[in-house]
View (cartoon, one colour):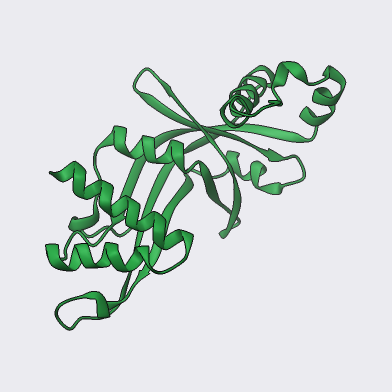
Amino acid sequence: MYIPKYYKVTNVEEIWDFVQKNAFGTIVTTDQGKPIATHLPLGINKIDDDYFITGHLAYGNPQWRTFETCEDVLVMFQGPHSYISSSWYEDEEVPTWNYQSVHAYGKASILAKDELIKELTIMLEKYEQHRENPVLWEKLSPQLLEGELKGIVGFKIKVEEIQAAYKLSQNRKEHDYMNIIDKLKNEGNPNSNQMAEVMEKRLKEDK
């Protein structure tokens, strides 16, 4: 991923915190030279000093079969993004786009059944535990679970390289930066509001 120096993020803990909060990712592999991708929720685990991305694909999805033939798998995570009008700048300039994006590269392997069950249990707890009637692994019938397990393939990716770009108008002077936040808040759409919040948070952390 091309990352200008203004936007490069190197704090590993910050990057993985972002991934945890934006865990619906895109996995990219190649099949006979042709890129293929799947969009799906993913888990992130740290074992000693290594990070692993886990998830599962439908058995009918041919992408899992490419894991054995691909040297590297690319996983992309996307955060808030928004159009930035250059009319919000004090001086004449062209428009741009603000965004947060993380790319992770690594080698994928297939999970054993017990590993897959552990991954699914953790994912259910993450997204269900705060709900009034949580659907947790131990609450589901063995018959249902066994049937579902036959239809999916679990995987894990040992992350060998991670790249992060947060394009948040860091290169603009303070007057422009504050005006961009104000304008984004008045755009009237969720992405713009989220970007304004991210930019405000960055400003507070830098002080």
